[in-house]
Image (cartoon, rainbow over all chains, first blue to last red; front, side, top):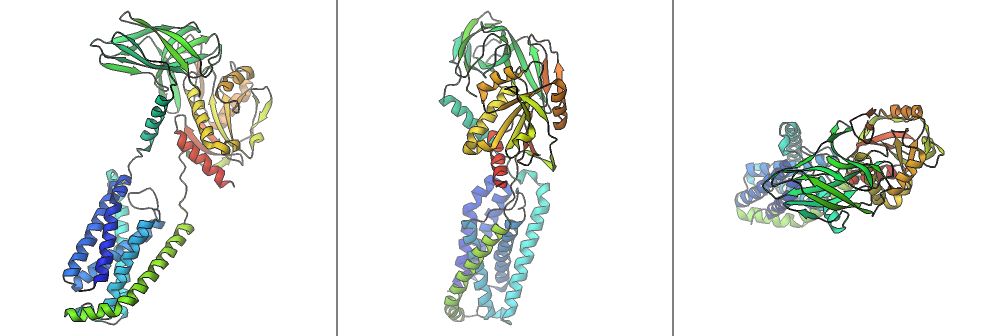
Length: 306
Length: 215
């Protein structure tokens, strides 16, 4: 039985590091790699020290555990390398640092008593100073190195939020729950899905959005549309130039073979011009579509509750 | 080095070490709590902040009920200002719908937020037209219009680009304009701006923070 307290304490800290590595990886690859490295290093060190507590391993343990404590403390206050800002103080972090602290303290106590290894029998205060110095130097230097490396390795930095994707998926999933768009209509190889519009006022215009899916071998094109509600229907494409949205009339919307055209806000729409009455949320109205292949179909447009 | 020496050392120090360890744990927890409290993580706005924050020059326009309205009338509320026009088929209704979602997400706190829709097309957007248009979106939104010069002056205040454009559409002219949202805090200062396609969640988080901050 040799010095089991530092061994157990540091193994525990190592296991916690490995355990939280995945969630940190999700944040930034560099963080995940760092936690795996720290965890593996701690476990390897503990096993090595368990087998033979040499002076070198003793100092290595102080540097490793002490350095990680200092690094932790620094990154609670200052922005973490490869991160967005200071990291939060949480339970796993506290337990991990506490066990590292227990590890360091027990190492120092044993060394101060000259019990640990005869080779480092020395004045009692010296191990304390040594431990502090090692922890500070290793912790601060690794913080500095990490900070300096951050701009050099941008791919290891914080992942550009997949959150927005999720929001969008969430929104469309929500849209499927509540039918806010007209029913799907099939004509030959073409399928017209979910025609909808925002509310609008008589005399003004309204954009109709829909998706046309072509499962055939031949390209087709939407060439005209008509509704009794409006004087005329035009096709518009949109594009942003900086913060300014530009709209351009086009003569048709092409639907490639085995492809689709999705008219959505910000992309393009069928514009009803000269509305004869208001479009109110929940209204439905028919819209005739005419295709280059000669196909004609009427879809129902649903006015969406904004 | 003999096992027995180490073993004795460990036995002798086991209890004090445990005590010290527990004390250290308590101290560490205290220190961490103090650190977390003393350095609250600064809130990062999703919108673009104006630096320095500057008061907005007051202006008077006509609302959808034909009443003159001053920006300073809304002092004490957060104002979300958006430029658009009722003939605008795509961006404007989409943005208004998004602002509707923002207001819904704010719940009770929406009472402290006022959406202003400033027309960039006063020629066609009379108060009556604005009223009908906004009634389909959210009747609590205030639509603002007025004399062309008065509206143009407001555009200038926010640096909004407005251009009547003939694109060969039967809809007549289009008004291409800067499609941005502007947030004015409760002291009447311009604090944040967003592109028109900003995420609802982001705007809600920022507005909630601004409301919290002002308490």
